[in-house]
Structures are given as structure tokens and as C-alpha cells.
Image (cartoon, rainbow over all chains, first blue to last red; front, side, top):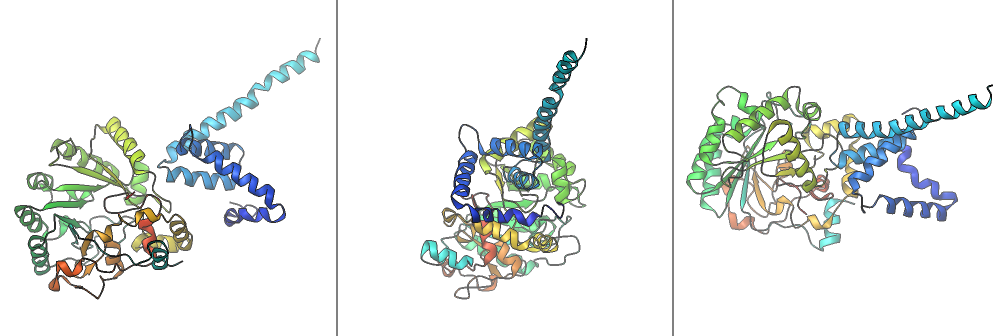
Length: 110
Length: 317
């Protein structure tokens, strides 16, 4: 992690509550509930988490969800597959915007 | 909070030993491998090894008392000169024998027949395989270890181990490949069985998930990478009071290579002997005096009480 993103800051997440404790509590309650096993297992949820973490390129989330994957018995093979799924969707989302370019070309052409 | 205080806060009394059915014996730290997670820092250059006189006393202790099982560990227990005597005599006396094997020992000189020896003696095998993928295993145990382990597991299956016979159980041990907790044992067992069978046709009996203790070579790694406090905090934060009934120290007596008595193999690696209220050496062995002894605890004990718990037989909840 660069000097801007410091690993130890992840442990200070609670400091965010300082200036708005009620909103932070609502976030933590929501976050915790969303990660609880439900129709999806904890394993499935942390795999989603690691995929999303990479797509949003959050260093803290990548650290946290990689570790969660390891604690669910998964390896770099699992993590890499999940990142490919998320990245492919991210890539596809960019690629499909080519159609906007097609439309723009049509609008601006004879 | 210190582990001893944590126990008091939950149980209102210190941890004490129940009646032990298992005598666990560490035959020494000599090993053909130098795994990064080893709590006794076992390896080829170690010299600690149980002598024959001590081994004879161990045999007397297991045969003359109501132990059901002799659990042999190391290092590589097979490398101790008294190993086969202990197995053979304990089996003759009707005791179950567990051998904790690193699998690669099968490739060492004079070990060519160790698989057949195990089968003939009906020894229960508990084998180290920290994960079912090559990269993960070799990273912890050294390059080439995985391929050797797989070959030995196939050989053991051919001998009948892990194929459903209650006489020939073969269990595998998962260790986290770093400073994180173990996954749920029941879920990982299903995955191990599927992966090892699909990839190599290998079968086994049970999977035991065991946590890495901040002891020995693993502690050196944590200290070197400035992660010792962080890992200890992780273990303490995952304390699960439901593990306290099942932790192994309450159910076994551990004998070190030098004959000293301990509550578990981790205390043995740390030199924390059994309570001075009772016998502390195999020379003074007294089965009844060991029942109810106060367990010697320190903060590494959080490693056995984190999450689903961790023992020689895997998760305890």
C-alpha cells in the first residue's frame, strides 16, 4: 500500500464515527447485517466482497476481503476467479458503451 | 486481558484436567522437514530426541494406566529409534496408537517399509497436508513437498488407509498458511475430499483444522514481520467460551522428549511444565495425581479457543 493508504488505518475505521456517530452506527448495522449468512453462505458473501473490492479498487477492502477468503478456506485460485468475474463485468460495462459511441457517430454523421 | 483472567471471567474457576484417555508423546524435534508453521521448530539439524530409557517409561505409563490411546508426535516421530518398539508394544497391550506423520518421511532411507508397518500394526494416521493445492503447501513446507505427499497418500490408499475400514483411518490436518483463522472444519472437509478425489483419486477419513500457535518457528515469522501483537489480538478477539470444555489440555497428558510432563505440545515447546501440584516427569508418573490438575495457561492458549477452537483432533465446537 502507498503512503496515502496505510494498512494500519483499516483498524481505525471506527474513528469515522467521531463526527457523526448515528450515521456511522446505521452504516455498521447495515454492513454487519448484509454480511451475515442468509440465503448466501458467508463464503459466497466474502467472495462477492473480494470481487467488488477489486473493481472499486479499495486497498482496505482488498486487504480485508482477501483475509476473509483465506479464513473461509479459499486460496488465490478462488480469489483470482472471483476478481476475473468482477473485472469481466467491469470490462463489459465499459465495452458495451461502445454502442453509445456508435449512436453518437450516427447522430453526428450524414 | 490475560488468558487466565479470561477463563476465570467465563468459568469462575481455572481450567483443570479431566480424566485423560490419551497419552501424547513428543519423541523429539528431529525432522526431515523444516516447515514454516512448526511450533517445535523441528528440522534436520535439531538434536532433541527421546532416549530408550525414557521411551520404556512411557510404555509402562501407557500400559499400566487406563489410557486408551498412545499419540506419537515430533518432529518426525518415525525417526526416533524407539518409535517402532513403542508402537508394537502399545498395540500388543491393546492400546490404540496414533502417529502424526509428515508423509514425506516415507521417502527417507530406512523408511521404505513404514507404510506396511503402519498397516500391519493398525496404527491410526494423522497426516499433515496444510491445503489441497500445491502452491499453498509448498510455500509452507518447502518446494516439492506437495507432490511427495500426494504420492504417499496414494500409497496409503493402496494399503487400505482412508478407504472406509475402521481399522485403517487416515486423517489429514489443515493449517492456515499464515496469520489467519481456520475455516469451518466441516465445510473444508467436503472441499478437501472433493478436490483430492477429483485431482488424484485420493480418499481419507477426516479433516482436522488446526490453528497456528504463536509459538516456535511461526512466532519467529510473526515477530520478523511485526505481526505478533496483531495476530495475538486476532486470536483473543475470536475467543469462544464454548471451546473450553473441549480443549485438548483437559483431556490428554503430554510427555516431552526429555520425559517432562506437560498439558499440551505447545506448552511443551514453551517449556511450561504441568502443575507442580502433581508429577512433572515420567519418572514420577502418577495417573490419579494428574486428574484434576490445574492446567498451565498463558496467552498462547487463545490459539486453542479462537472461533471453532483448535486441538489435536481439530475443531472442538
